[in-house]
Length: 343
Image (tube, rainbow, N blue to C red; front, side, top):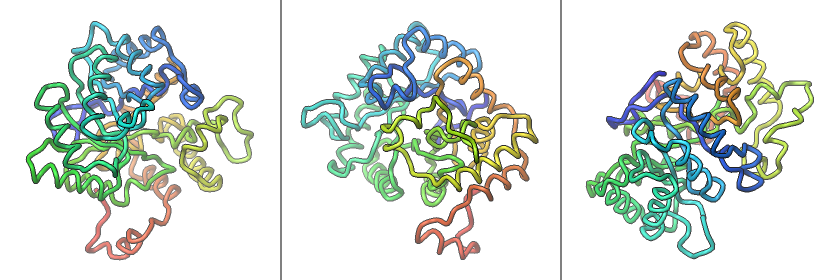
């Protein structure tokens, strides 16, 4: 397993981590992704560790905390061997303060995660979504206090816009608070918006990408192809999943899948392996979160590392998945002399 630095930090992380959205199956949304209990989760952790994958991503909002509880039991007795990444920020209860990134909620959220995970520290703690109702100063002062107390070792954010992230980094620099070293972001061959602003920001400010949903919200599993009926079993059969995910035009999806199929034939790899390997060659990407309902899916995902697409194959995938960026990014790209693409 290859390891990379997480942003501008000293922490080495594997290029793949195992997401625990499939643990628990606490409601319709998460049941569509998976519903692994402790025994199956423990098996997946065992396989991951044997392959050198020692980072596991979760959140207090995954199946109402059940994912954290199951992960805590699955890693019991080997905490020193793993890197735990968790998140908070989405609503977790009916109380007025059971949401967001206020001091009140973050202190309660971290204590809850520590209890469910059966640990006394979190390696990477991330703000799950931007909270426009709480001053960035309050959020970052609280996170800095948690880092200094030893309950958190590194901090990150998730689903921030460019200005959200840059404002937060500026606050940290102004007051000497701990900085975000990771941004957990949606990025895939059928979702390249991350490249427009967040990628250049990550390069400039030393923020590593931890990629979620690298298979385009389940569309790059190899089961969706032009002219073929949709699979009988798929998370995309759940309206709860479809409603919360990105909208992707069928023709665009099929164009990308056609290109992936061509590269798959050249390499002897699967569609998901091609999509994951492409991400691992992108600037700023430190880690890609993979999910797995079972051992077969996990082993397939692990096969995405240890080899590289050629420059020609990357170019073919780039061309098939290219879209016109939103303004002002399309305008800036007309002047590559002063606005070169990220490398």
